[in-house]
Length: 95
Image (cartoon, rainbow, N blue to C red; front, side, top):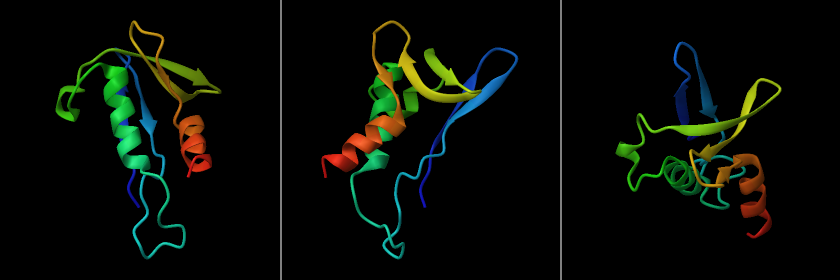
């Protein structure tokens, strides 16, 4: 199973964002479906305002926290938010 995490530094404390199942190998019962891995990586890059994954480190973003968990991340200036649960559900529905 493939997952990914962004480790967010709040200046003295931190929190992780990610952990979603982005890909299941072919021997898993639920193999297939939308390209969650590509979507997650691309949206994280968009939110950070970068054009390649290696440039994401050190970029400032906003976070949306609910019940102590990060539910989404947002561009530091633009009104662009990434809520993986919502976007992955929409990808599944459009499949």
